Image (cartoon, rainbow, N blue to C red; front, side, top):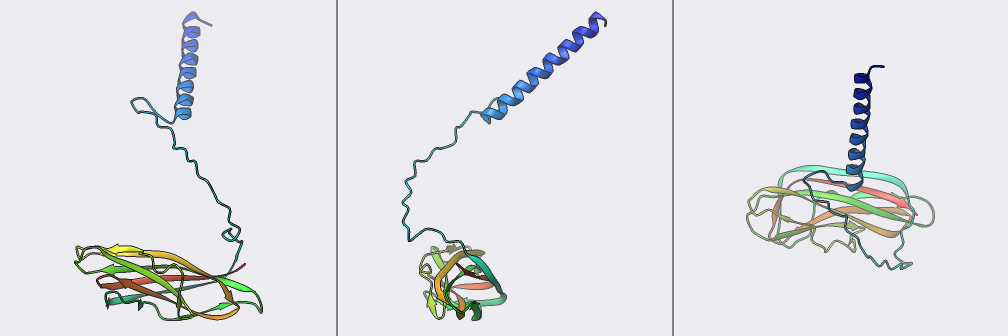
Length: 188
């Protein structure tokens, strides 16, 4: 083998090792030249294990979808207004309980007041879920529209038929254009 070929081969191997080392070093630190290295934050979270709050494995029994387009309807200020039609869902079986979970969103807007907080509420058998009083969003003050969404559930429901419905309320009133609600029935 000629001397030039040996030197070229040795140089190629050295460059290869150097490149592999730099690639590995960049992977380890997560940074590249010219950028500062930031360590991920650490958290010291104390978790209280209350046995009444632990998650329970559930089996999805059925999913119901309910959506529609309004042209638009007005929702008055400070009034929980039904948005979708009442829907009967079934908690199956002859004993035990079930959980109904609702993923809901509403396209709302068309007003110019500021600070127009709104909330979406799941009603089961004519009663609001425990989480419906929380603000889910704010309608824009420029007359535009936004999608406000929430997910709520009610547990411990007896087997049989239950009526579910989505309600919506705002501080200053809005127009509603479109809505979607997905109701799921689970058995523990």
